[in-house]
Image (cartoon, rainbow, N blue to C red; front, side, top):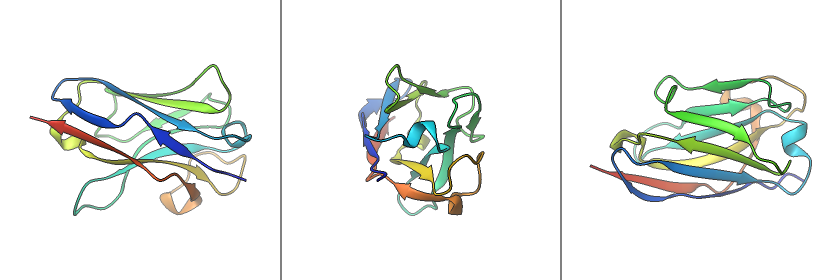
Length: 125
């Protein structure tokens, strides 16, 4: 059973940092590629970052590369998205998702069949 739970969202100011967490109680993070997506009001959902089941490969969307870091925690059940130098354009609901089929490297959004409920990030000017 895959059950993803995000946390860590909130209201911050431009230039601040924030760390989001994604937790799962099973073996999802050691068997599936996991991604962060975000959706701002009125806009399409956007890929933010991904990490392979081994943690050996990470992927980033162009708008966040160099500012965001996706990593594994010491616990096999927690992943972290560290977001630095946040800008108002980063305001969105951030969702953690896992690919439906295990042992596959990053695929398109349609490959992600398991989603968390999302956590909201608001960056004020």
